[in-house]
Image (cartoon, rainbow, N blue to C red; front, side, top):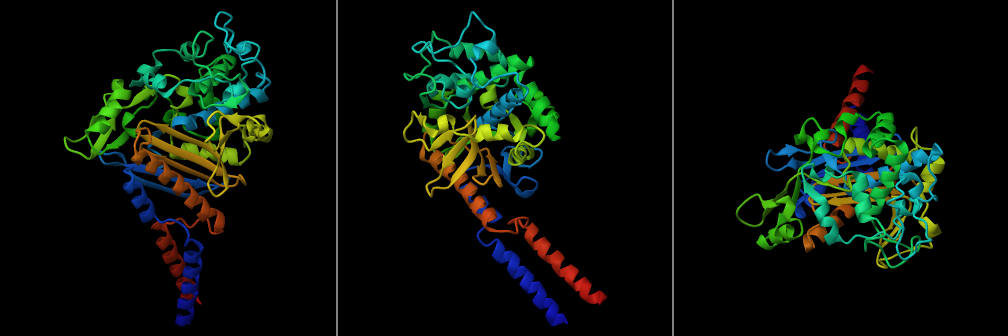
Length: 442
């Protein structure tokens, strides 16, 4: 009987190990992150009902060596924040309070500050165009850098004042094409869509997101926000870092964002650059701050076709490529095709994923759903891809590769719950004890 017991245990082990043989283990992921100098990350894989894998890596603060935590580490989401704008907008659409194809000036109610393309005055500025980045608004990167400000200083201007300053017919912040002709990624256009939500709901945009989206999902909104002052303990907010091989990298940072006072942590190179907490004036486009757990709960809502937040038809609307795919991107090299705030990304092997990335100084994030809409992967990290160097390219590639390997793992293996970390050995030991107990009782 002892022989039979051992055989049963070995067979069980082989089934489990073979089932996850194509999954990256914790060591491989750690090595990948360290190779591109990402201090820490949170990785979560979910389906509509369960968390299939979760693991925190490295540190959220290199000074205090505070480890990353799935529930406690608060990340600035970067442009993943835009996915909440579309959710809020569709929430109002379902209440028949706004129309995606109506002129947004109707909702902004600012007759002295009408928004329209100065060269195409008959083309309507609609919420659909703003959400799908096809409204022909354009702001170059150098023009966006001053929008980053230390601490909460970026909130000294109202969202309305920020939007009307950059999106009005008296500026040059427009493409040469009319609205609806091409897609061109626009932070300020997305922020304007959030302003529409704010005006129609008659409450601040972030209050609407928290009260109408996050709270109904069972999320503790005392641990979500946009301002540093929204959080009881600022130490819970993940610190931002970049890696500098030499002083030139420091000079590059301080030439494009001198207002952030980015400084090296040590006198010699290579070293880490510490990026102080900052704000971003068109905040709905990039500054929602939540934990990995909160974001995964939001993503699961989407995988459940809206759950208790949106109707399935609204999810379908968000997923639909603007213009039925006939509107091409202004950047012909782009592989992204926009729905409403979310976008489709086609990989080199032809596979398509739906979601959004997010990058800020010292932050790089990615949240994707597979084409079958049954699996989602989230990687949140305090690495950097803003600096114009080869390390930024390698960092982005690493985050994307981690996504692909996790999709490969969980799409091809039916035993999803066996994550590739130390828990696996605990599970195997438990199986052995249970089988042995069964034998001893018999």
